[in-house]
Amino acid sequence: MFWRMVKGALFRQKGKMLMIAFTIALGASLTTAMLNVMLDVGDKVNQELKTYGANINVLPKGTSLLDDLYGVEEDSGVTGQYLQESELGNIKTIFWAYNIVDFTPYLDIQVTLPDQNKETKLVGTWFEHHMELPTGETLNTGMKNMKNWWDVSGQWISDQEENAAMVGSLVAGRNNIQVGDTIVVENGGQTKELVVKGIFNAGSDEDERIYVPLQTAQKLAERIGLVNSVEVSALTTPDNELARKAAQNPSSLSIKEWETWYCTAYVSAISYQIEEVITDSVAKPIRQVAESEGAILEKTQLLMLLITILSLIGSALGISNLVTASVMERSREIGLLKAVGAHNSPISRLILTEILVTAIVGGVAGYFAGLGFAQIIGQSVFDSAIDIKPMVIPLVAVLVSIVTLAGCIPSIRLLLSLRPAEVLHGR
Image (cartoon, rainbow, N blue to C red; front, top):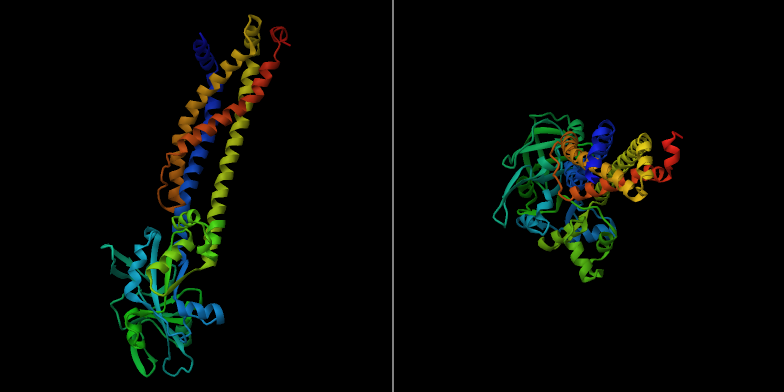
């Protein structure tokens, strides 16, 4: 009898029930979309931000110490400290190897151009370097990936072009250098002719430099197999109190804290692991980049959480109005039930069951619509699909139930206040 009454009420008020189902579906779809995107947005935002450069700088210990104590920079040429190029593949063997997006080494030397008294920095680096890793895997990494926002006139050079160079826009403008020109650089009595294959505008002090393949700089500086810094681009987790504590002194952590920190992709943890595999190195997070990434990620997730909360509040208000209107329309029916002996409790259960059945239909429809919305957001914002998170299903189910019950509270209060004699007389 109870379910016959529920079925009858649903069909008699199908228009209003469809409106309630649509309201719930709208809230559920936005909740599903935002939760899926929010849970997947960390990697997506990090991946987007990685296109704007490195967030870890690896230096020799001696260089790092002089920089900390006396402000001597790694490219000043006074430290005489270097890293071994042969060890760089070890970066992809750390615990968070899959979070290492790109890395590239640098060897900085000071050179002079003809008729120029001022020295210019020449930087040897990898452009698109193919390397065999200690794990047996292969990797293509280098400047072309890490600096892909550069505005390049001409073309990128390859690591095999030992007589080619890319010149910064400020150096090119000051020396009237054009793409295709041949320039002569001198370092310590050694000269080298280079063909300018590209002129780039980086919008930073890199525009004051000349970039050449790493082996070219090594031969010119007589530093075969050596580099003086490595830039690493890694996907990281925003810092929290534990990460900041570890960054100051990892040895101050308890065993449990150390395990949690080491096994989480904090920029300080990845830096620590890099130091473990590169001899006599210090890996320094580029704090401005790392903290900006964390701030952007937190604000993005907060925005999505606010949208979710507002959509649920809107759904609750809509459900409240619709259910209250339904109870008022059925006031004589409810009054008659009370008049023949029905108590408030079974009548409330009847109304709640009708709404919950409607909520299940709307929630299921909203969930699948939300998956579609999530993919639209992923393709339009990140140009990639959003991973479907199974944990969203129970979250949406619980939230839809809470919102539905919260929206029914005003109508249940109205139902409890109805007096059979008054409603049956139309008062």
